[in-house]
Figure 1 (cartoon, helix red, strand yellow):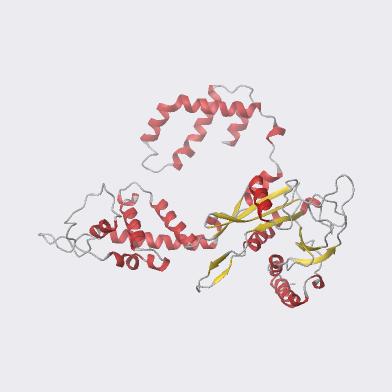
Figure 2 (tube, one colour; figure 1 turned 90 degrees about the horizontal axis):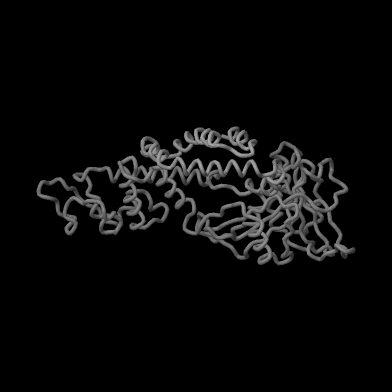
Length: 418
């Protein structure tokens, strides 16, 4: 499809033949993305009825490609890198575990609804919970679900409160009503001749397990306006956002709510000592802002901090190797903390290699471009990581925190075989 688009874009006025050629390339992909029951004659009929409109859309697309200068179409650094900033839940180990558990629950639900009525009369129980679809035709007497029919073909019913243990949803805190809804969805599964694809049902169950009762911390890419607005509201010391040089803006969501934001990009100041790492290989963490007092319940039932800021900084450390610009390899991660801060976020990442390396003395800004937006008059501690990072100087942090930091860093070096 890519080669067809490029060839069509080279012509100033794409004609009908170019649009038809593109349609021929797109059709197999469209057909493959459809459910099996729609990918045959129904799809062919749709194409026949709507071909003129589809060709018009493709011509408009090819016209736009042909008239757009290549330079104007070049993406910015932010567009190139930021889509990699967030961590889609499908790539996380927690999601894979949730998906495996969801498959088990779905199989359990399918087994129950597939039992013949003589073994288990499930429908009256679902009806009593309000979970049974109105269009579903019931067999048996729902007014008296415990009474067998005259032919003896209707088996015993079960109590609604027993459903979670039968399906296995009790392990995740589901109610009888929620489990009844799951069974009702299993009744309409595509594998049973219904309309709901099995994979979609498993996905929905997995999302419920993955999020949990309070929601799970999820790292996502956000746009510049969203990131800057959050920083301006929630960063106590530096409520300013400089989009210049920004490569990443990532956020942490808890239960769907944005609770923290971090931005990073290429350094915009002067660098006299790059330690063999070109400026295009340096990734600078510029801001982290989060809501205060965030807690969650761990597996032991204890209330513990969410640590959203540490999760964002850790993600940016992982992105360093692939963050080099102009074919450079990411070789140094750098960020700053204000002298006198507890630096809890950065100290939590010492076990990954982040370390304090120098103190930058504060001085008043001078010249027409001087600004207090970055607190230049305040002393800062420089933190670094990566192949070109300088050796640690543990005297830069509070004395009571040095021993723990040194042990964590030693463990990091040992894991790397150093």
